[in-house]
Image 1 (cartoon, helix red, strand yellow):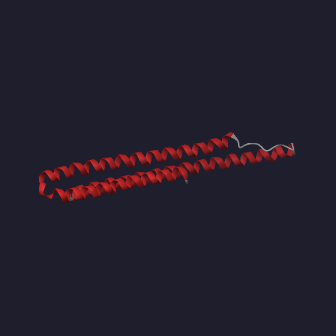
Image 2: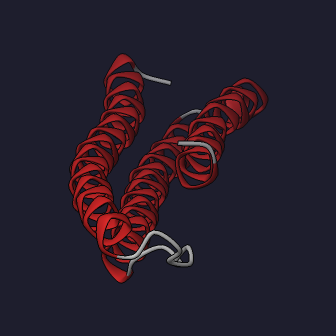
Image 3: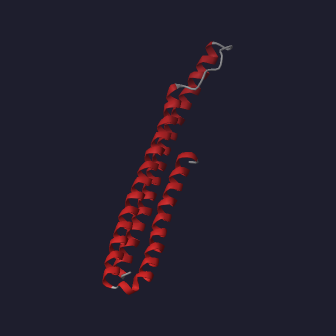
Length: 148
């Protein structure tokens, strides 16, 4: 493969990782915002509970407020959105890289048919690396949804 093709493949792979990191940043910011909202809701609920305990000492415990539940739902939704964007962009960037690699490999084989074996093995190795980057993006997106 020519150096120009390698540069393009490297750029595509780097772009996929950059998009993945950007999605993680968006998720982190959304999670911090949701956590701040949840803290505000919890503080307001504690103040309401303190007032209610002064008025009625035998009051029953209540379920979590709707605001707290919606803050958790918003956080999960933003995580899912960020993960979807990350894996979508990583897959798109990987597909572009694979398309460029296959096109350049076809041109190289047409120019030098005797080097077909070496060109094809280099192509397969490059495609494996691109696909690995996409799988890493998928794994990180899944971790963002379920772990963070």
